[in-house]
Length: 181
Image (cartoon, rainbow, N blue to C red; front, side, top):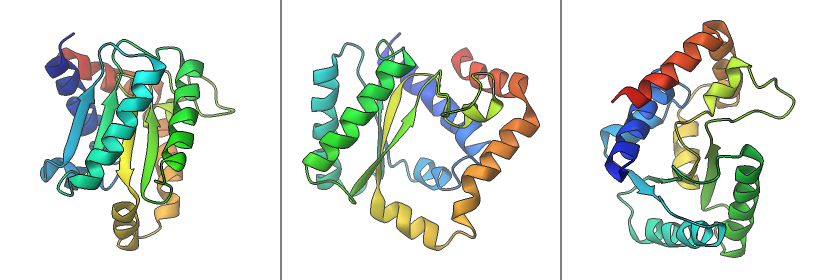
């Protein structure tokens, strides 16, 4: 799988799932502004993934026209528990590097499962991506966007309700369509 194919599938997922289902009401603006950076790590280790995370946080510091970065791992961290270890280490490293309150790390994985949820709960598809990835977001951008959004605290509940209303099969097909590019 080439980097460009991984990026095309991820972009399709953002457009059809994230924006199409309105899971993130702020994503469309970043897509329209072309301010999303895609970094595909075809071959990586835990250590090199974390090094790349720090590099990307530094890159975002220097590059204000890039709103957000997606670190995509098409061949690694397929096991959800291993991926959660990566997320925890990434969050801790971000804090150690002085980025607490500057950047937020959101997590997306093909087998994402909310704590306490059944694996077949359609709500898991709010965070099920084509590939394991870390989403680096600017905290100040999130704050500004939330200031102009009515009931931002209700976003997760609305997303869950939407996914459950659409059902498992719908959510599975929607995400699967991202691979048909």
